[in-house]
Image (tube, rainbow, N blue to C red; front, side, top):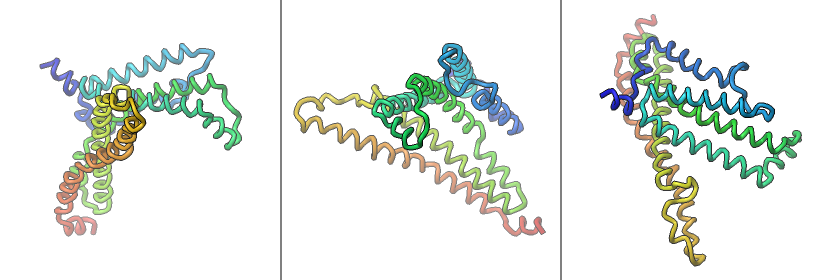
Length: 262
């Protein structure tokens, strides 16, 4: 039972911590090294690059351990799969733009001093660490504040305007939670079909004639059209539940709240 709990949901449920602002302070303390002046270096310095890498590695492992304790192994693995995919795409895109001279063109366009290539590479590595640390922490923050709590609190407000704005905030929060969950599932599915990230698993028919090599266009269509549309359609699955909550609040007696304001 304990092992299954660790795998499925962890044992430290942040949603059980009351009041809500204690959760917010705890999550803010976890993210403080990313933004504080005395925290982690925003980029790696060539003079003490190994010290910076060690600091970032320790912080990333601490974040992963905390997320594991809160949500369990399964969800942590899904989140890390998406985080590593995003971080690798960031690294590959930055390296490709630098190789093609796009960075140099942007620097000339903005009239800024060109940076040393080694400094740019170290900055990309630092961004890699930031993504694999902040993505699981950001998703943990989203799921730690249930939108249903906001809906219940809004239903107890006597003033109509605060109740309306609280409801809108609850709707936005629920949609963000659903979008984050859908994106994570779709990224995991993409990784299953494309083990090499940007190269599909089944591409044997691409070899041979020029007509066969045009099969990459079908894969590009899936990448640019079908997958984004799938993510959008699955993200809209939360709309019926949001509408149900809205109708539940709209069913409250408006005359009672008006009399209370008077």
